[in-house]
Image (cartoon, rainbow, N blue to C red; front, side, top):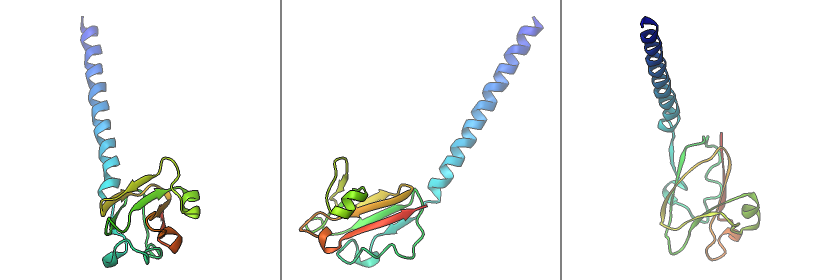
Length: 132
């Protein structure tokens, strides 16, 4: 009978250890999000025809948030792939933002953004943001 109780005790300890480890992992995972920075694209000028060079000199990380502020009747933001960026087109599966105050969380690597209104992309309204 003592053997049965000992087994149950070890099982409870294993469950408690697993729960503690899970909580610790959740805390570690949350640390990266808590450290994420928020950037306003174009600073005071917002997302506009002159925003293409805005990322220059800035250090971005995966999980950082870009806030695009613009006049929604004049501009939009489309997150595209490299080909869409190069050709100023919206590939299937691209995400289009139209609110005028859009928040976009950066993925690791290059993030490509264009404006598809009124030929703005072809006029240079596009941007690459590289996140470590």
